[in-house]
Image (cartoon, rainbow over all chains, first blue to last red; front, side):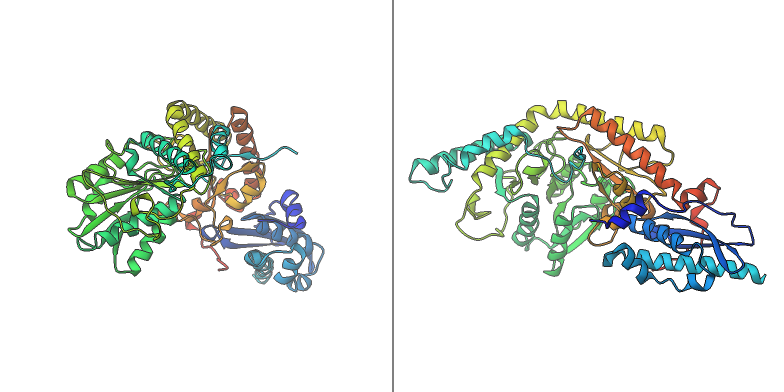
Length: 126
Length: 405
């Protein structure tokens, strides 16, 4: 399978790899996917006010899944929560030139962003 | 740029230069049709074909009259299974095989089921091996054929062929074995092993692609087949079509080399296989061997690297030509049916890599391959949320996953 240059770049030099303190009230964590499906993404955000000041990820999955989550962290860093919620999987597909069989990787990345934000929001309410 | 290192010898092999050299005259000077009986061109071609038949027969302990040339193993499998089931329809319609067989066998069995046959798919154990007692328990009065592979193409596990063959002969049931991965790697003898039908393929044993054969036992018992290719009645009526003389000459030479070099090659490749495993497991934790440590091919190593997805690993080790049981590397997006049949869990199937070692693999190749694997598995595990969780002491089987699909 041929990968786009952008997928290869994110695979070879993934941005924002790592973990944030998931117990901190300013941190939201999203874990989506399942090992038996071959993809698990963990995406974390650190929020100040309503702005995402830091984002980290770890992904178990194919090169396109790694690239999708790496790109997602790059995009959400510096955005407000509302702006981050507007990122859709089709933008990721376009940016990385993902083939149809890899669209689910972009869906998972979008889900990971939404799941991390939901976790952050639920922490603020409690 | 350095060329990738070929470690996919179960997929195919390069032609041995000695094979190519033997084949060359049969494209140009000695181009005759082996079925032409009226001139020397035909006689020369026929002589070459008969010599090849002898070389193949000698490798598997058969007589040269028992060799039927085909385009490869897939065709030989189709001929054996369909040919037997059609020929022995009066005796019965039941076939026994296993769910870890090659697709050529499984899809042919599906075809037979559609035309009224009944097929029992035995489940292999976790190492990919089928037990003779499983076969014994599945036999019925109307069983006409047992079809079980000699060596599995994905994990290299060897079935207890001799015991199965003995059982089949005692019960008067025909036994076919797909020996595509076994010939040239382990000793094969159709008499001692009680095999009635066996297929092999040129390109897996340093011969050319597009040629293979089916061994069809001629006595004790005499096996009869309904031809699947009608035409000029070549190959004693079992497979019509002008013989691929250069290909057959190449297959013959490849079999001769396989026979004379088998024991030395088995030692050399198993040493390299073990070295590869040692170099990898010395550096990495959580490495899982898929297959059977005792009963296996000398040149196949299938490892799972849990918490790393196979396709992403293949992307990292792009300097190595290997294959994976991961769904993402297959056209169907399904994990390997063999690893599934072995019930090792989809997670391990997703992270499996098959390393195939061959005649032209060097120690340097293996050392380089091991270092590439170690470096990339480490890097991808740093990226893996699963590895992080396991290191934190989380039992992954207790996690409630939010599967997106």
